[in-house]
Image 1 (tube, rainbow, N blue to C red):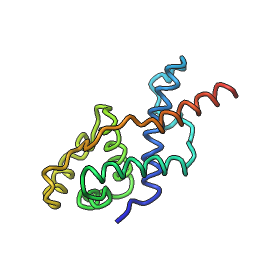
Image 2: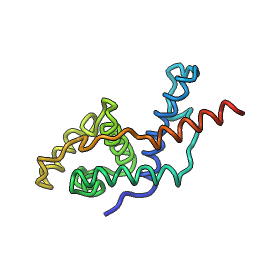
Image 3: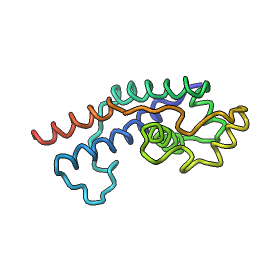
Length: 145
């Protein structure tokens, strides 16, 4: 079982957008409470997909379960998969949001189905350096234009 490429890319774009907002604000650009996903530039889809696939692999190693299978048992489809994948990554990044923030009941149900009481909402930790570097490059390009 595998997540649809558009789910992976869209969730990765959402994470990238947060890093882009941070990089923009560090350089003095005020985003003034706007929706970051609406104003962030669109990153290269191949790069977004490759970055997210690496982090999905780390989560799957920690869980011992495919993310797509977990989402299936959570009953997630379409945009809910995008949002849940973004939440999952944010939890692993230590952002303060996790998959349980918005999908607590579904996550608990899937853990029960999979007999995975050991499964955690943020099963591993990472810094997201690839997203950060991609975002910083985008901010630098914006400044040069």
